[in-house]
Length: 348
Image 1 (cartoon, rainbow, N blue to C red):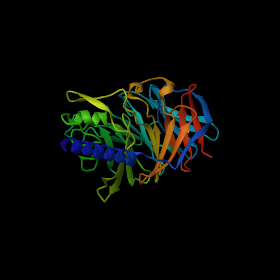
Image 2 (cartoon, rainbow, N blue to C red; image 1 turned 135 degrees about the vertical axis):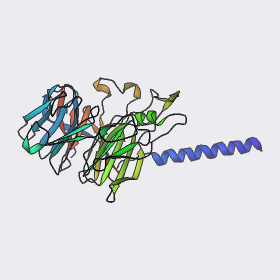
Image 3 (cartoon, one colour; image 1 turned 90 degrees about the vertical axis):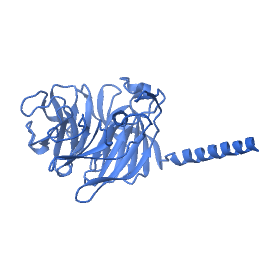
C-alpha cells in the first residue's frame, strides 16, 4: 500500500506539473514569417544603441563613437539630418552616454550616463548639441552602492530605473524631494543568494509608455516580462501582470548566480506604444549571449497588449539587434546580415 501510495503521489505530481507547463505555454493568434524592406542601407555604425522613430524621423546612437554619436535621419528622404555629441568631462559632455528615450509628445531626447548618473535632455526641433536640461541623480541620497543603470524618461520629476539594488528590483528617483523608493519583486530568488547578485541577474530593459501610464520591464538574460501601472498623485508603480517567456536555468557558485549554457536568453530590445509591447526576443542558449556572430542575433518579434495578452509572433527574414515602432505602429529594425541596415517589416 505504501508503494502504491507513493506511485499515486508521483503520478499526481507529474499531472500537476504537466498542467502547469501547459498553462504557461503562450499561444499567439498570429504566428508567421515576415519579410523586410530596406529603408537605410549600409549605415555607418560601430554598435547601435536604442533607436526611436517619430514622424519619419529616425533617432539612434552609435555607442562606440567618440564624437557625433547621436544621429537624426529623415526617413522620407533617406538622408542624415544632423549628428552631435562628444564624450568627455567638459560642460554638456558625458563620459558613457546612452540614448534612453525619445518622447513622442514633447519631442525631447533623453541621454543618460550610468557612471556619472546624469541625464541630459535635448529638444529635437532645436537640433542643438547643447542640453536643454541636466538632471544629476548622483546628488540624491541613497542607501545603495550603485545608482540606476537603465532609466526611462521622467514622469514629471520622477525617474524609474533598474540597476544593482539591495532593496528592490526597481527604483523611483524623485528629483523634487531627493528620495529613492524601491518597488517590484525579483523574478526569481534562489535561497542563499544576496540581492545584489539577484538584481544583476534580473537586469533588463525598462520603458514608460508614451502616455506614462504604464511601465514595462523585460529581462535580457532570461525571458521575464512585467507591466506596472503608474497610480495616484505620487505616481507609484503597481504590478499589473507578469509573464515568464522562459524560466531561468542556473546554478549557484556560493552566492553568485551562474546561468547554465541551456538557459534561454530573453529580450534584446523593446518598443512601446500606449497599448502594445514589442519585444525583439533572442531566445538563444545562454552560451551565445555575448556572441558577435549574426547567427545568434534575434529573429523574433513578439507583440503583446498592455494587458499582457499575446497578439503576434513575427519571424524575421534577417537577424536584428534593435527595434522601434512609430505612431502608426510600423515596426522598424536594425538588421545585421550584411552590415547594419534599417528595415521596415512587411506585415501584410
